[in-house]
Length: 82
Image (cartoon, rainbow, N blue to C red; front, side, top):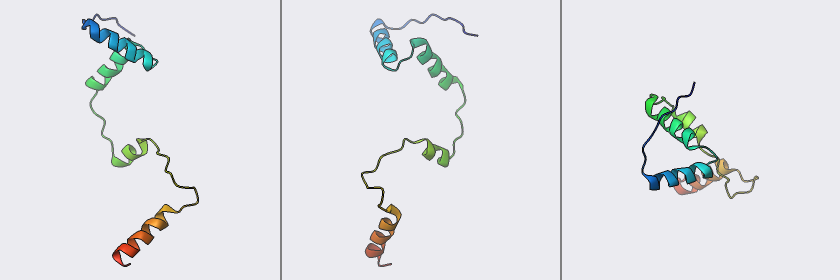
């Protein structure tokens, strides 16, 4: 169940908040609700693997047929004499 609350916010800031909410295709109410959820909920313990998996994928400027693992080992072999 939702409840209404009144907030007093500086007028200039209200305009910026509304513009931001519109850019994000959401409402000011949803922004405020999400913010307070993050503030009051205890931080979740995350492990490193989950964090890495959550990172955005980056397109590498290499062709698909390049074996980066092989290239890494070849470069290190010549550098360290393996």
